[in-house]
Structures are given as structure tokens and as C-alpha cells.
Length: 579
Ligand code: FES
Image 1 (tube, rainbow, N blue to C red):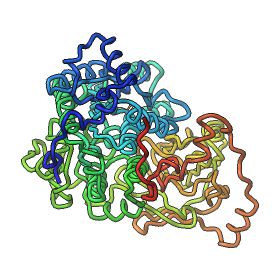
Image 2: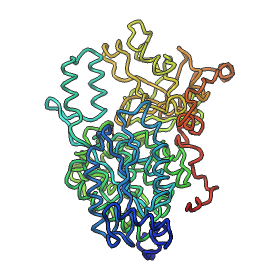
Image 3: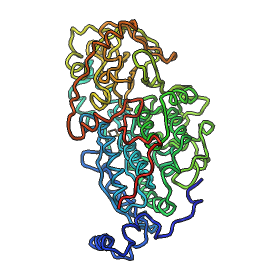
Image 4: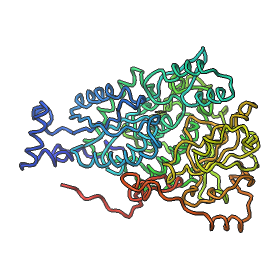
């Protein structure tokens, strides 16, 4: 059912009326403190309170425009008869946070949930864009059960260097490899640094940020077309004001997250993830987000949908273009229009329309950027899920961003025990490595290191100099959505949890068979068992504070890396109202 087919609330039925309505001392305090802000009763009385959760900070340059956008959202809220309240929440800056922003995704989700719960908020506008901010905000808001929509931060403008278009991450890794091969000078590299991030906005590739905002849109959690608008485009400001307006509507109709999110909506998101050649990180995030809504998703859902979905977005790292080209070509709505037959079109959205209505008349203006079904970038299989004795609970690879000739490969392992070991030995001229080797990195899973984006292991310098640009690399890490290469990721269980990856040794033969969905360690079952029996679990290096909570409660990659106690398995009743 679309939300405005329900009965509109009366003012006294708004959640915030519990704070402002009663004739008691506490409510007196609430009302008098609103007046302390310089607002008179007539400006706020009986109006929906719209919480604007702003993930701005000075170290998150992807959200540099968020202070302006917050004002524009407020404008929309006032115009529609609501009362806007801006609330800063933690910002997860992908580039600056150590050990990795992923480590803090669940913390922002907790903060979001509790912020929405404790304040008199009738509906929320979540301001997110930089990678983990989008899933974290959505996870928290779903758990809080408060009506909300997402204002996607938008990608930054096109970058250009020495006459060539450049893209966040993807071209950085490419030029870094050239520098490692001695083909780019220090001065060249510094000059490149001046050009690669030309405006505010999130990474302009189809990395995790663009993937997650696109998936939020197809889930029905943004206004139609919102995810593709570049951050600095005037349309982005207009969209922000419309978010404010629409949040007031969501409040009046008490449109709860469970009215939008369903198994079918998540199937749409997975289909879209495949069609846009989305980031492998989306798998972990979608499983976690669905888990908050009490909807089980498994890795096999991704593999199955991947097998029937073509990759149509010709965007880096899988393709050639960047997000500004995608927007000009028709954006996500144009792409979704191409794959209508693969989507559940009757899913409701926060716009008060169905997904089908949102995309029915969406044109594509450039069929090289958004390919038609007859001419896809890849016929199917943007992401593949592999199983085997090396990954009993699964692992993933993005074939669309890999060297096709390596998708079937057997080679000897060269093992790095952790990232420090990798850094120390990678460029040793005596490193015994060839292009045929399979590089193995341990100690980078959720429990070991917060699951950093180390999965695109750098190619050893001696091989770079010999012209090698891709190799089979396997790890329990993630990789940036902007990365590329034949990288097997998210091996589960991870090495630090005693998964078989922990006992791989130099020289062991490893077989990668993407079409057969297999990753196999050519070691006998008996020998593998013996090695595992002798394996010693590392001491947890996080023994207090948030680190302890994280270490004690985080699930493995195939389960979404959420905290166990936040996952909604359907056994928990509604949270009690707290007065
Ligand atoms: Fe923020 Fe890439 S660093 S989206």
C-alpha cells in the first residue's frame, strides 16, 4: 500500500506530541526550551518535527556541501508546515578514519537509532553519501522504526588531468601502479594529486558511495532520481528542499520503514547492484540493512540474481565513464527503465509512488553510458559468490572488474600473514613471486582489523616493472568499490576466526574457478584438518571500549558484519516506549 492511502494523523497523534502536548512539568520544560531558541508557540505547535541528521564534518570532504544542504532541507520543511531540527551525528570519512570507516559503521547506526528514539522526531531526513554513512544511517533508522528518507550526498564533478578524464580511486590505483613501475615521477604524482578531487561530493566512480545511494533509491528510500544528481549541481539543492517537504508528508502519514522495505524491495536492490556493476561492499551492507528489517538475505541470493542480470552501467571501475556522465545519460531512473522486466515494480517508495511509476517514463540519452539490454557491458554475473574448502561460508569476486583471463586460474600461494607483513616484503627484489602466483593476505577480516579495504593487494614492484597489472589475489578483506582486479574478497570465516585461510602456506596450490563458483585449496582434507588443529587463535587486540563491543559482537562477512544484538531475527518484540 502507498503511504498516503492511509489515514493522515491528527496533530495530537504525532510522536512529538508526547513531548510537547501534555500539561505537565516535563512538557513545560520542552516547550519553554523551544522558546529559548527564539521560536514562538505558533511556529512549532502541532507541527511535525523533522530531524535532519547531518553527517558533516571538516574531515569528510565528500560532505563539504552538507551545511548548505541542511539549510535547504530546513527550507523545505518550513514550506510544508513542519518544524526542522538539525542534529549532527558522527561522520564516517572513508579517507581519514583508521583502521577503516567500516569499523565504525555499526557505531553510527547505533547513534542514529538512539538519536531518533530519544528526541521528539516525527520523521527524519538522513544526510549520507560517503561510503559507510548510507548503510549506517539506514540501519539505525530502520531499527528506530521512525519514518525517514535519505538525502543522497551526490558524486563530485568530473576530474581531468592533462587532458584525460580521471576517476576517484580507480585512476588513483592505476597511476600508483605506474609510479611503482617507475613510469610516473614525483612531480607528476603531485600534479595528479591537485586534480583528482575537484569538488565536494562523494567518489565519482560506481564505488561504494554511488552504489549504496543508488540502492537506497531503488529500495524506495529516496526521492526518484535523487541518487544520481552531482553534489554541486543546482538540482541537488532543489532535491534537498524537496526532501524536507516530503519528510513532512511521511510524518503526517506515519510511514514506517517496514512499509517500504520488503524482501521484494531488497531483491530489486540486488538486481540493481548487478546492473550498475556495483561495489562488492554492497553485499555486506545489504545483508546488514535487511537484517535490521527482519529480512534474511544470503550470499546465494546475490549469486542467483547476478546470473540473470546484465551489467548495463558503463561506469568505472567496470566501465569507462563517471557518475556525472551517468547523470547526463539519464541516471539511475534511465537504467532502471531498461531492466523493468527484472524488477518488482509495485514496491512502494517514500515518494508515495511505486518504483514502477518512478521509472516508467525515464529516458536514456546516451546508450554507450547506459547500455540497452541488447548491448550490455557484461551479459550477466557482475558479482559472483564462490565456495570451497578455502571459504566454507563463501567469498565474492567482481568479474566485471577483473582480467577475464584470470577467472580460471591455478597457481601457488604466496602468503602474507597480515597487512604489515605485506608492506614489509612486497617490494623486496628477492621476493619469490611470479605473475602465476596467487597472492594471499590473512588477518584482514572483520574481527582482525575491522575488515579494511585491503583486498586489492598491490602488485609486487618487480612484477609491475615487468608489465604485470593483474594477478589473482585472495583475502578476508573488502576492497574499495572503486578498485579493480582479480580479487577474491570477504573469505568467510575469516582467518582470525579460524577459517581455513588461516592455515594456507607458501606454495600450496590454489584454484580459482569463477564459472564453476569454486575456490579450492589443493591440500588434502586430512592435512587441512591437522593444520587447523594446530592453529592458535590470536589474542583479541581490542579489549576495552568500543573495540571490545565490536570484537565481541561483530558477525562474519556473509552475515553482514552487524552486531548480533542489533540484528532483527523476528524474535524481539517492539521496543518499549521510554518516557
Ligand atoms: Fe567519500 Fe569515496 S571517499 S565516497
